[in-house]
Amino acid sequence: MAKKIPEETILRLSHYLRALLYFLEEKKDVVSSRAIAEFLKISPHQLRKDLSYFGHFGKKGVGYSCAQLLEAIKEILGLNRNWYAAVVGFGNLGRALSFYKGFRDQGIFIKVAFDVDEKKTNRMYKGIGIYPLEKMEEVLKREKVQIGIVTVPKEVAEDIASRLSGCGIRAILNFAPLKLNFSHTIIAKDVDLSCQLSYLTYHLKTAHRDSPKQSSK
Amino acid sequence: MAKKIPEETILRLSHYLRALLYFLEEKKDVVSSRAIAEFLKISPHQLRKDLSYFGHFGKKGVGYSCAQLLEAIKEILGLNRNWYAAVVGFGNLGRALSFYKGFRDQGIFIKVAFDVDEKKTNRMYKGIGIYPLEKMEEVLKREKVQIGIVTVPKEVAEDIASRLSGCGIRAILNFAPLKLNFSHTIIAKDVDLSCQLSYLTYHLKTAHRDSPKQSSK
Image (cartoon, rainbow over the protein chains, first blue to last red):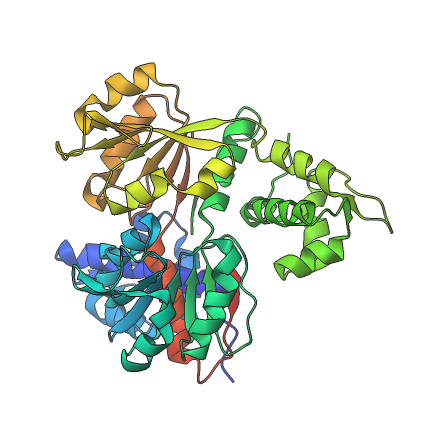
């Protein structure tokens, strides 16, 4: 049985990845936990604790081999292969996510998108096939896609998620402002943009009382 | 001196807001902590603990007045007033965020946007003034804006953030994939979309070993 690994640890692993890419670009072969931690503004203890869930990395008093740690984290996160995703809802946000460079840099490619608006569908758009929503099942039967990215209105998000699940999709990134209700066969991550903004308004409002916070998710 | 309130608590407050809006739409005047918790798939204990940071709400054995708790949370989050934001980087993501309904629903309005691409600037677009980046200081001097939303490439994000800070902006929502380095006068929230996706690939990869997780941020 695997150890229970905190969600925050998994999210931080991709920050470590980003730091290691930076140090490699800077032609550093070996890097200390202190340097990575400083780059990311966290404590070296946090970094070492997070990595300890997955094994022993680096050499005491020397540091980590950038290339080796990078490969190890990529493997842990499943990023040593390509993944394919479908975007449901090809509005402003759907389009932005479809062409988001950060996804492609990690080997995650948007293959198809679905929308109810007939003006947008039944065509290729910058390499992505855009289809009518009603053809989702048919298209996903022939396209190999593992991840669904949901940017539809909240009223239909639950239905879309369950249809995606019916198509064999096992992971969903949900931008609709609700918590999806799922069986345990699906992995879901809700991204609530409004919630991030109200974190700011909370601190703006209380800034004259508390000291402001800096945070990363 | 105010109590130190966990970041997660503040982020969950906007989920409570969303639940209360739902119950009000359903014509419920009073709601139990159990009902809110079930709606959001969290524990009633979590809800009560989060609220306890801010005072005493609801009546034991009766529940919360939806309207009262809604107003109280809006006030805590600073959402009982309007806020104005500037988007820096009017690419796909910048445009999507500029017209994101969820922000307007919370009383957060994008007033101006900035971009380096001359084809996009010096015009109004659906009510938002789009300006050249070099005019940022000039425009922000006359426009009342409290929040900056940064969607520029990571190479220039730090510079943009410091220019925003120089314009008196005290809160930044950062979509560039780096942790911004700030003085303590600025409140920053980094939203790392790639990191959310690799949370899914991690679980997809390990799904045959661990049981999947459902999570909300």
